[in-house]
Image (cartoon, rainbow, N blue to C red; front, side):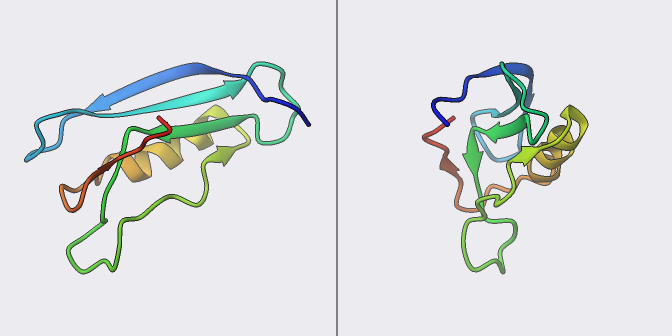
Amino acid sequence: MGNILYEVVKEYKTTVDGLDFDIKGRVLKRVEPTGDLDYMWEISHHCKPGKDAATIYYPSTINAQTFEEAKMLLFSYMVPFTIIEVVENKFY
């Protein structure tokens, strides 16, 4: 399979009340598309989704067929971001 090279298609940034830094996210696309899951998304930090959550939520689905799907997955994590147990994503 070899290395897979991605390019940043779009980057987003949001402020979250209670944090002194921005949360950043981006949608990426394979430089050499295969036609299958050519898009992915990344986020700069992770958090617990709520005070009753057992642990920090690390998304299980980061790949997508289209830009719009990847953007929707990113926004579904990014928009309701909380300040509960925020950790930096060391792979961002």
